[in-house]
Amino acid sequence: MLRNTGNTDALIVEYGFLDSKLDDVNQLKNNWQNYAEAVVKAVSEYLNIPYNQNTNPSIPSADGTYKVVSGDTLWSIAKKFDTTVNEIKRLNNLSNNLLKVGTNLIVPNGNNTDSDTYTVSRGDTLYSIARKNNISIDRIRELNNLTSDVLRVGQVLKLKESVINKYIVKLGDTLYSIASKFNTTVDTIKRLNNLTSNLLSIGQELIIE
Image (cartoon, rainbow, N blue to C red; front, side):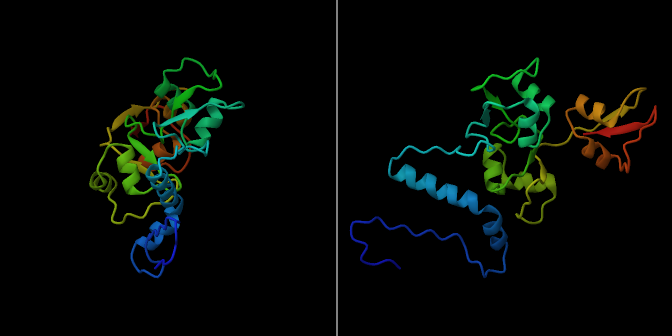
């Protein structure tokens, strides 16, 4: 309890209890940056002070975009946001790989609801992901068979019902070329088809999600 604070505005923030036996312990450990950001934002708004959320260039801005800076390439941006060059080009209707400093690019981990999946970043919670992608927490749990709200960085969450396609391997096909064609990843194709190597045979039927 705070006493005798004079003209100083006192603020107490309670996130949870570290000795708790419930999920809130992991939520605190995994999402402390998100909680801290929320406090800074709330205090800034209360005091009517301009608030700039995107001080980290590897985090999408509030509108789900990334501003190109000197030295950026589509490959480096794709790697930064755990996506592919083709996905960024598709989202931004790019016909080539040329970038202009200052351009705002839509990135998959931002506030765009066109993606079928979301890759968990540091500080994410089910609540923040649901709000960012205009979906309910219960729907995310249902689509991903989640029994807990604990998330791990790099975890890929489904945001929509998957559409299953089948593809017949042709001469010259590789897992990489097929993944690029369907805007997916080699690892996803291997997982869906229980593949233990990258070898393909002509006429082989693959499940594509």
